[in-house]
Length: 192
View 1: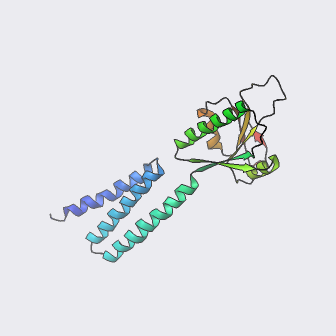
View 2: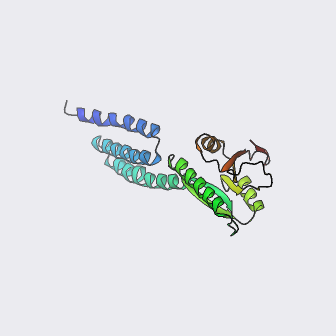
View 3: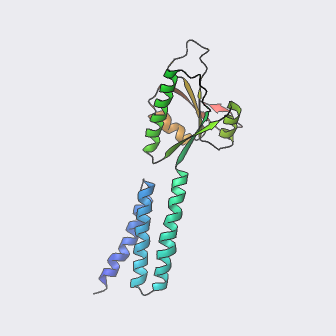
């Protein structure tokens, strides 16, 4: 009967594993994964396998958590390609652009993602980067040749990731951009 605490500790393993699987925040999942590794090391120690416990603590917990943290940090980036700024932008267009970027940061911040703006020298390089999957989306100023066009929609955002397009379409309240989904598999054809 005095070994019943081992069963309680062992019961923590599937509980912690389920918590890792169902955790929405990747940083919280990393912390819970560390707890899972520590509990596993404790179980191995209690069952008389100190060498396995040490290996679990060093490799399974410390090294794995470090590598997972690096992977999570580098993968949660939304890269948007832009044309390099020219000094001819009117002030109201800059305000619309800053508001659009703030809205995007808010939307992706809810999903624990960083927004990275990547400048390109010309439109061809920007489109090539989108098709080569260097960036997730492009955001360029629209030409106001048509006077019937809404003056608030001063930017065109082309997105190559369907899930990101769906998120932006439902949550982006800014009228400053027109959203377009670009299917990179269909040789660069755009779909609205």
